[in-house]
Image (cartoon, rainbow, N blue to C red; front, side, top):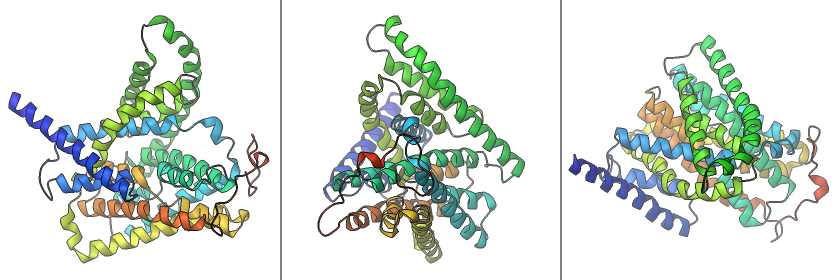
Length: 405
């Protein structure tokens, strides 16, 4: 028993060290950390060096990392901010979900894949990585422009819509049943609205009394209890546990003590989240890439993933002008972590094959890598970044359809 515990400890060390070492190397060459960590998993996993095997404990550690990741994402999404981004961002987000979903779903149906596998592929194509796009916009000094505000607002709404899609597809492990789809959709939306609307009211009343009844800093333990509790509740009603974690983050996002909470969550994030991406890389069988048809499918899916966001989101922003529409379309292209989460759920439920899982990973890697350099080119205008939007362009109420924020 002791030898087994030591072996697990050694493998945890290898996973974490590989993620951080490749992360440092990747950062030097401006590669997003999510990609470095996935590659680390491929290298140390059973399909290359074989230093760590995919076991029940590695998957449990990965799921814990995903829960912390989505809780942190939820903390950064304020509902009051979502109400200010205007109908333009809502239209961009909606088209940015609908178009890629049906492109991915339609391609796999045409290639005679199962309905469930096709739906999972469509779901993996709908998300946008807020973090990657935000970092690029910040580096360019354009984070306060109207275009950047629409991109980030749409990406936030996009993630919420993605969570609803994920909640639906996670209930399809036994095949497609349209009554089941309707019930899971209703349950997911109802659960989400109840937690966000009722949960925030409860927290406003509970927070002032938290410090009074416990010594030290009880806010962090309270947040983690609620995060894990909602993750368990989401799992019990048949949707992904990470949905509950995301909603828990939304509940806490408006609280006064959230700034201090984020500092503590960041430390937990730095330790646990890499295990999720490393474990995802470990599950990718690189051997499937020897087949020409898999590489062809990966190329087609990646092309449709890029076109789906570029066209869908660009059309949603076309009244802002062609240049902002192009910038917004490209800014919404990176898929990041949510696409990987959808694929990992499908693989865990045995509803998608190793080949389709590998295709999704390739799509995520390429879309995440291609967007930052293209954004940098698009935001350069005669050697200078566009000036920040005036305050008047950012009204506190939603703007009419098609107007700038």
